[in-house]
Length: 165
Image (cartoon, rainbow, N blue to C red):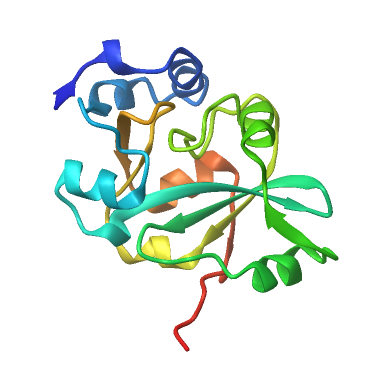
C-alpha cells in the first residue's frame, strides 16, 4: 500500500480542491490489488466491512441517483423507490454509471462526479467515526468522518438498508 498524491485520480483531486479538502489528497491510499468490492477494500485497509462506504448508482424512473451505503449492507430498492417517490428503481448499467459519474464501477467516489446527481446516504454510515470510500479508481480509497462525507456529497440521510428477514 502507498499513500501519495500520485495515486489521486485527476477528477477526484480537482473535486477535493474545489471542496477545500486538499488535505485529503495525502490520505488517499493506493493498493497494488483492486479494492473494487467492499470486502476487498476492507481487507486492504484492515477495517470492518461496515466501515467501507459503497457508492452505488441506481436509475429511478430512468434518472441516475447515487446511494451511499455501508459495506456490510445491501440497498433495499423498494425503500429507495419510496424515498424518491419513483415508480421503478433498478441498478444502473455500467455505461450509465460512467456517463453520470465519470468513474468506472468499483472506483466511484461519493463526490466529484461529472454530473450533479441526487444522493441518498444510508444512516448506517453514521455508526463509525471514520469510513473509507473509493477515490476514483478501483485501487484507491480515502478516509473521512461519515458526517463530512455525506455533507460533501450533498447527501440526504435516509434509511434504505435491506433488513434481515
